[in-house]
Image (cartoon, rainbow, N blue to C red):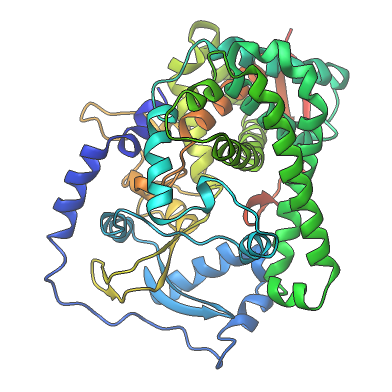
Length: 478
């Protein structure tokens, strides 16, 4: 069951023991100097990454650097001066020393927008004591056991999508990622209002459609700032800054309108009711938190689900086996489904890099990273490393089967893949996202045989996305 994969993320007492046992073995050992990739003054090696394909190919570029310089190195890519690490043990050590208030890094354009327009955002944009306060409150709500009553609302969400897909039987789905954006936001609405979803879905359908389009636009605009810094684009009043502002304005307005409407349904059994009944959260903060939940869910869950359907469309035998398993097994209890999603998230990690900024020195296995350095965990490299996964570039869901000793069959180091991050700043919506993706995959495979028409490669648009349109043909199961 999917909870097995998440258990380390959800138990603070386990993490505390993990922290103390990991740190003490490495703080007193002698350390080596961190290898430095030489570059030009000010710009560093920015021209090297541009020649390698730019920011969209950063995962491949950094992977090659790890092959050259080892699991730890420092490189300055333009304004980005960071220590890059790819060894899972070093990642454990970093997480063990991240402190009570872990700091991550957000895109410059997002922060600049908030500062320019005085925009107050939700949990993802918070730091320090404010973040800790609301994270502790929301942990109790969002990381508890899944509410099985939500399945009825989830059924309604997927049935609406598959009713539209009936028109494409025997054809390629024309707007797959747009459909999955809409699906992700609809899932979020269903999770917020619970059994009231049937009643409210028509009331909010226009907001969901507008939000799905604007969220996609925000990410598309943000990627362009890898070429021109956001501050420069704003100063010069370039179109890319104006387009970005319009997209963010639209997404926040649509999400705010949506949340205002959903608040009238907050008396049910959904997440909104749980948050509204929690003390110490004023209504304006509830809106901020929910708006950011909805915006975050739209992009991440949509692309992860697309990668899963894309992969199953290439793997006919795995797809057929899953369909057979789902005839006799509930999706929550289906080990094969759970393994498929784990393997998809390993091969196509939505966050190919996880970032931390430590206020203190960090002791790694063989190195010390001085305080206040940017540290980037290279998840794409660790997820595809044969030291940790047998035949790492092959799709093998069975590698996640448990042996008698409780270790995985084909996984040497499970910590080498962290689809939801780790520690106190891990993804707050991990259980919700995992359940929604499993449910979507299960319901799709029960209804359709899917076939992927064209192979694609990974590129980065902040997250991992395909380098061309994913074309999937569907045939209704007889």
